[in-house]
Image (tube, rainbow, N blue to C red; front, top):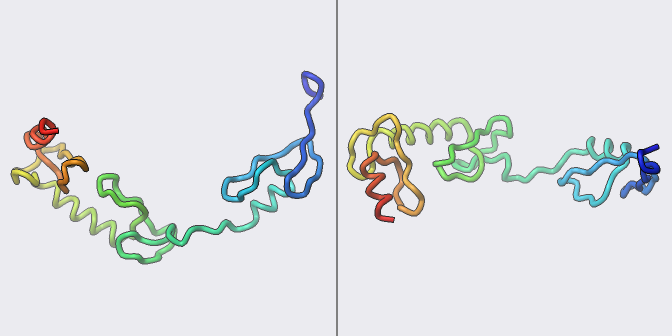
Length: 137
């Protein structure tokens, strides 16, 4: 019995049985309401259908599976996952961009600065070019 007169019993939305304890369903199940323990376990055993685009490399379109995909860096502006060969290729091209400034072609220091989206520049800038671009906006 609870502190203020007992706990209210609820009904399961799937089997409609009265139960003192209910569980909140996962979003993927598309169920509104509470579930009893038996129905919750039954839904946990069912496989969840994933989107086809979740297991595909965004660069080459290969399907290596969910365990062989890597998340790209934020500055690459890619939405999705990359397979291992594409990830290596993107990292290699990114490392090449980090060597020299894209505006004045000077060698970049220890902290290269990535160009902002609104500048319409793809690559990294030195401190002087970054400050010049920043003062324009």
